[in-house]
Each structure stands twice: as C-alpha cells, then as structure tokens.
Image 1 (cartoon, rainbow, N blue to C red):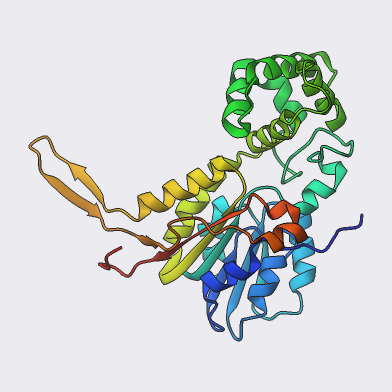
Image 2: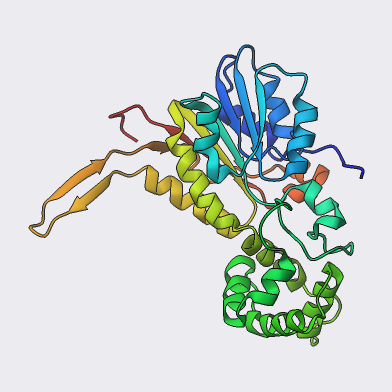
Length: 314
C-alpha cells in the first residue's frame, strides 16, 4: 500500500510555541506518519523524543522515518497511557508535549481502514485495528436513542433521530457491511435531500469518535500531559472538531485555576494551586496558504499552555 508523505498541520506554530531546547525531553503523543516528530527530532542535540501512537501502522511508519535520529523512541500506545509510557522510558517530566487529536490522513487515505467516504471498504474505523469493536459491531449493538445522542453530540447531526433509526435497523438486518453501505443508508434516511447530504461526513465523524472513545481518551490524555510537564514545559494541542476543542479549552481553564474546597461554615480552603498558564487565549489557526496547500488543515485549532513553578501565579 502506498502512503503519501505525512504533512504536519500547523508545523511552524507548533515548533515556535514548544520552544524546542536541543537537550530537552519532548513527547509527540500522536506520531502518525512522523511529520511533527521529525521536525522536533531535527532540533535536538543530545535531547530525547518519545513518539507514541495507538495505530500499529503509524508506529511502524514513524519508526522508519525517525530511525536516523538519536535519542528517539517510538511506542505503540494511546496517549491515555502517557504517564506509564514515560515511566517505562525512564522520563520523570517532559519539557514539551504535542497532542494532535483526531484521525490521521493516512488512516483516511486507506480504504481498508473504513474511514473513507469516497472509497468502499469494511465498516471498521478503529484507530487500533488490533483491539476493540468495529464500527459495524458498534452499530449492531448500540441502542437507537444512544446513537441519536452520539450523532447529535459528536457530529452536530440535525436529523439525528431519523438517521439513527435507519442505521440501527439496517445494521441489525445485515444491510450494512461497508462504508459505501453506510453512505447509502444516510442518503436513504434523508431522501428529501438532493445529492449526497453533508450529514454523511458528520455521521462518519460521530461514529468514528464513538468507536475509538476519542473524547474520553482526550480528556485523560490532557490530564496526564499536564501532570507530566516539567516546570516551564509546554503542552501544545491541535484539535479539529468543536467537541475536541471544547475539551481542550475546559481542561486548560480548569488547570489554570486554583482548586478550592468549600465548607458549610462558609470557609474556603485552596487544595491545589494553578498548574498551568494558558498562553493562547484564542486558538492559533492555519494561514490561508497552508489551507490551500493542505485542505485538511482548515478546521485545525492549536492551543498552548505552560506548566507553572510551584507557587507561581497563573
């Protein structure tokens, strides 16, 4: 299978905000094809880079791309295991962590993975094809009311109930086997729409997020990443979906505030000082030149935070 070279999104801003130190320790939580990791590794002299990904193919490709760099370790793991990966790598804290949420281009470009709207393939959608249930298994099992919630929450699908009922019925009847079947089923559920409705894309997105528990993994990964930063270390997060960006923004805002306990007599007690300083009050967006060169970057948003010294004010 031919894989296109991985084009990293917002590469310039990511490197600028991470402030790579040649002898520092850095983590790329979503190595993908190795694009961001290669740029980080190229700036290290005596430093270390740990790149991880939940997709075994990404681990292999990133490993090949990064083989020429010293001090690089590529690990097959999801970023919700970040703390464990760092501990096993002998790392106490990182000077910079990058987390690029969402599906990678190489996964979309391979019809056999089941992410593509254009090319027919098995209804899989697992980011790690060695574990968990496929999209087809999920659709056969999920209750129509729960699927309605997923389509509405993860895909902003307006007629979510109508689409969910059709998908659930066809999955149980054996009419859904491939991605083309899924496209057809969404079209049938919205037969009043001419051509291919926009909901096809957002239904795929919502099912993919549910199958891979992407938002739950993101919440856990962010929590661990903040904990694993050294003082002054930076966490850069790229999101592509409004739900992802909301989770990143909320996680940053929560960690940037002191945590207090409130007592019945009206007293309050600070139990945790702010952990981070949010550096990007508004997300960094790709320039038009990047969007023209790489259309998939158009919805990308970058947010960055910096770990505080103990007792340092946010």
